[in-house]
Structure formats: C-alpha cells, structure tokens
Amino acid sequence: MKSVAYGDLLKLSTEAARKAGSHIMSNLGGITSSDIVLKQTSDFVTRVDKESETLIVNLIRSQYSDHSIVAEESVNEEVSGYRWIIDPLDGTTNFIHGYPVFSVSIAVEHAGNIITGVVFDPTRDEMFTAAEGSGAHLNDRPIAVSKVNSIADSLITTGFPFRRKDHIDKYLSVFKEMFMQVSDIRRAGSAALDLSYLACGRCDGFFEIGLSIWDIAAGSLLISEAGGMVSDFTGGSDHLATGNIVAGTQNIHALILNTVKKSFQGTIDS
Image (cartoon, rainbow, N blue to C red; front, side):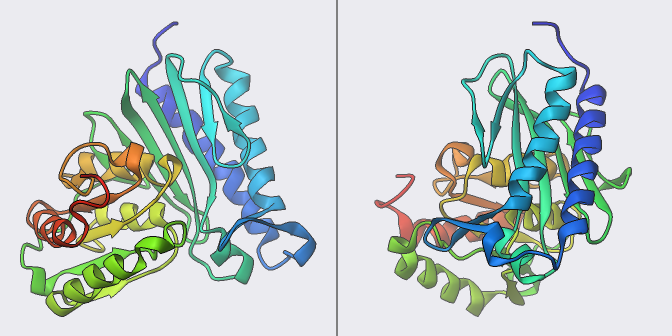
C-alpha cells in the first residue's frame, strides 16, 4: 500500500468534516421522532448521523479506496494499512434537543498509531487538527494545553457513563472527590470537543468510562501533540481499546489518575 502524506490526510479529513458539519447544521432544529432510533439505553442515532457518515465515507472512498474504515453507525472493517476512524456526529443527544454542543471527529490510524486527527465544531466554525510529530492547531493556529498545575485552579471535564451504568457508584465517588479538589467540573456531552478544549487550554483535565474509539481517537492525538498526557485508568496506553480515559496537563493528569485508580483498581483496566 502506497504511503500517504499527513498533509493529504488532513486536507481530506477537514474537507469531509466541513461537508458533514454543513449537513448537520442544515438539519439542526428539524429532527422529529421519526428520525430517531434508540441503539441501546440512553444511546441514540438519528437520520442525520447516518447521512453525515455516508458523506464522509463516500468522500474517503473516492480518494483512498484501499484504506479501511471504522465508523460509528455503519462500517467496521478489519484493519488493513491505513484505517479511518469516524464519529459523524459526537453529541447526538445534544443535537436532538438543539443543545449546541456537538462535533464531527475523524482520525487516521497507521501501524497501530493515530497519525492524524480532526475535530470540527460546526456551531462555532472551529476546526481542531493534529498530525503526528507536527503539533496541534485550531483554525490553523498552533495550540497547547494550559499551564495550570494546581488541582485547586483546574477546570475538569467529564461525561456520565451512560453505556456503563453498572459503574455509576464508583464513577460518582471519583466525581465527588474531584469536585472537592478542583475549581469546577463541566459535563457538556461531546467527548471529542472536551478533548479538543483540553488541547487548546480551555480546560485542564478529563476523565470518562466506556467510550468508543471514534469518540476519542482524534482528540487523544490533539492532546498529545498539544503537550498533554493521555492514558487508560492504569496509566497505560490502552485507552483506545478500553474506552476508559484520563487526560490532562502533565500535573493534572497525574492527580486525576491517582483519584481514578483508588476507585476503579481491581474492576476495570486492572
């Protein structure tokens, strides 16, 4: 398989994200009950998710027919060379309710590593991009994680474990302990945007349980390239496989990880 320049992958990723974002925005406020399907408890998909995914997949196929794809709503191909990892609408519940926090996330993996990542917020026209070894950017401007080192000064983001409600008691124990230590906690409803905001310094740490690879692949690269830390709940590097993720600035990551370990050790990622 012929190698592909990171710049070419990012160019196509941003084009696909903008195309999907435009379609999503054109349907904002127009969703009816007939457009919504319940995948599992508290996990919804809409007609727009599927249409957005089709737009992205078709564009990729038109240029890289030999690449494999994993996408939330329709495609899960075996890894072969380059693999595109797509969330066509991260924050579907927000979108259904007209709550303006959702995004499009597209990453490319090669040889087991995420090499490019794009997260697009169509409501604010913010395009977050990263390429392995080349830093992270917001609308083509370089970004970096915050310089906050004190847990007391930190703003932490998270998401409730709606796919892993069996862990709610342990999760809430982490939430409570973190809340007593930090400046504040936010739960906005799009993990991809939470990770992007961490990469550009708008928040200082993040943790969540039971996410899917398409929720966090692009955002994880953004944080790493912006100077932050990303891990699973043991401090290892299996977060893309487990979906259990801790991220933050160097110091804040370590502090969140310590709290998470105390609650979850022996149950997940152990």
